[in-house]
Length: 278
Image: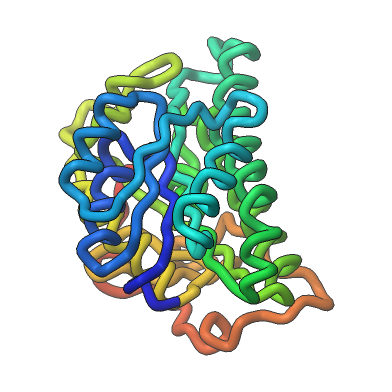
């Protein structure tokens, strides 16, 4: 999809990856709709981005996502892109994992993106096309102690996204997933519970602009799975030698995009490094 001229909703836009994505998309000519709970931050960001719209939204509250999409269409006439970026971490060992925390994070990390997909679909179908990018996590592609609850929510988001990609293809809607690693944002200071597990070593943090570039790449290319790397790296589900080992392979009866069938399964460049995912 051409970003120039597109109407793009970005959730979690008040800071970090969301704010960086909004700036990048706006710089490429998109009209950006900023959604997050922190209204003052949204307004400050909107003042930087010509033609942007700030709509304070709590994506976990009933009706607010639907209102966000309706207000976007009322103001902009259409919605071309949804970036489901709002999320929260939960970094505690399973023995200490509070089920109430897991339910709350699942609601934000999985249910809210699903509601967003459902809300934009009628408009995208009427337009004969659109792009949805769900921001997942590298923790769903590797197994780390202390991250079971959070990684489980992101693995669920991956499956929702993969199934959505198949189900919505006939409507011209491309669903993509982007996988950040540890990023230099407020994310680890705003966990639902727990803390960043470093294993006693310094963990390099990617700039949020790197994740924003991967999101923009996913919008433009329509790739199903994109690892945050420099440059962004498409990854292949079921690739036992690379980052796609824990992604489900597509079942029989669905059409696999030619770009993924032809993708070299051997990762290269930054994507081959053993990194501590977000």
